Image (cartoon, rainbow, N blue to C red; front, side):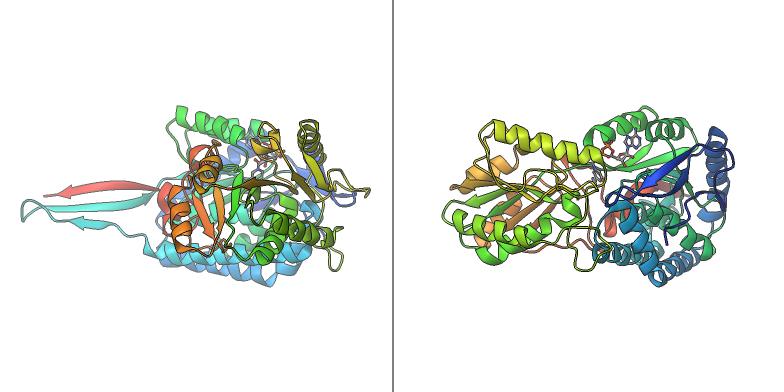
Length: 474
Ligand code: NAD
């Protein structure tokens, strides 16, 4: 039941045929799932050429027609959600329930872009002379190249594809090779929805080779990446050297601040479950927990108790709430972070080691008494580890929360409007959640500082895919 893997170039699904192939592995069982064809140089040239050719057609396609095709692709994804989600669970590892939710959220993102794409307006500026007309036009930038990660293999790609196609651009997507099924399924939905050939292309290969080749091409006018800060900075410098537009959705190290007037039992249980979604492999996953000292013991005991009850295993099995990590590198990184914290004096209250299962499983882990120098408090964990830290002063905790170069998500739990307002004003982050957590298509999503440039979703979603042209007509 695993997706038939392929490249998608100029409207054709391409497999094997002498190309290098990569084996895809199920991270829960380490069993092989399928072979992923890598794009040759000739394939990449063909993708560039077809995206370039298709741009002149797609740019001039009426917005209402572009919207119709995006909507149809969304409907097909919805109809196929069970199969697509099963494949995502097989190659990414997340529980099936989470994979179904990823497909549903992706459908909503596509529908949002289909709707908003019909509302890309210019404007008329009052002239200084009656026989002059001053107009501002918004035009698609051209061919885009998108590099998307493995944690939400379909969801992260849909945001970029929806924004590019909704704006009238064409796009070449390279997803994460570890988890390719969601993107191939997305390409099939667009193909079956009648998307003209070349508007969307999907390629696979060695990430650095593909990104360097595509970014060097003058055909590519916009670059979009979701992934780690170091890779994002590298791609941004390649794009900057050629003055290409860019959207960068990079890592974070989200503070979650729990004040003493919050509903502690509810917050602790909710945060413990939220922390383990996708095994903690989410860029907005809370990763530094600051708890007011008056409620610290109560919070810790409820948090640990909840994490202990989470059922871990193969995401296709009934009732499983946490799957494996995506690859062995991540398990090793979790162990390094725990060992480092322990060696500096931290207490491991729960977990702290890989689980005795065939796949890449790491135990839900709670650390307390973590010294300031521990790496976990500075470097993005991207896994199921929660360091719990005491605080007693609001200004101090806000300073501490802002002390890292990251600025993606932040969380505040309080029943005081004054505290909520003070914290949301002070936090240096693209996203501030107060007593609530949800990511929906109609709101902007993006980081500041090292966490990125630009927003995906919301009314801002097309900004990076459009040029502004001023026309003065006498
Ligand atoms: P990694 O940095 O090796 O890879 C991260 C992603 O970037 C992968 O999808 C990979 O295919 C891609 N990539 C790497 N080098 C590239 C290049 N030169 N050109 C184009 N794409 C490239 O790290 P990893 O171990 O696979 O993942 C762990 C880190 O990735 C985490 O610490 C996290 O910061 C980051 N990450 C972030 C997100 C996010 O949503 N912001 C998602 C997944 C991973």
